[in-house]
Image (tube, rainbow, N blue to C red; front, side, top):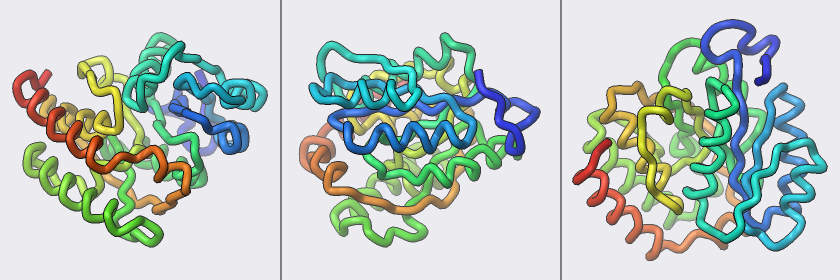
Length: 236
């Protein structure tokens, strides 16, 4: 459990951990963990059977490393990380990607929003300044966010952003079942339906070649709609 002096000395967000799902991120995960540590946060890296030096470099940088025996997808890795964070007593969880897509310098903005009580799920919003985001991703995010905002009953500009902060109460209440990128949509939808406040704060749009290589537009879109069908049948 980590105190955050100067940012969240008191209040419900005094204990926070970064959960980082990682797949073949040996070149970026070490510096990322060190930047997170410089902010006073612990880091948990879930190595999704990368088969390279991802786990070793994350551990050398000071992270707790959970190694999955077989590749299960980002959603499955996040769920493993969330389970560890809850069992370890952390109150807030920052989720961010291992490939450098998310700017660690923006983490204090999430911490500040949590301290101010703006929401129990605080989601990054890249759509205010989508510079660098490929057009296909921008259109996909726009469409999916419009659908999910309508279903959730609250405006969420960028439901697909994985850079987010979650209170432990949300994760204790929800049953997340997604194994891939659609977990971000499932989390937003179920949190809103359960009555939690979903807030958004602006974040930078940073895309790397590695991140784009893991996105499968047709497959991930199909999973999104299957997730919608599944959670509308069983919203809990």
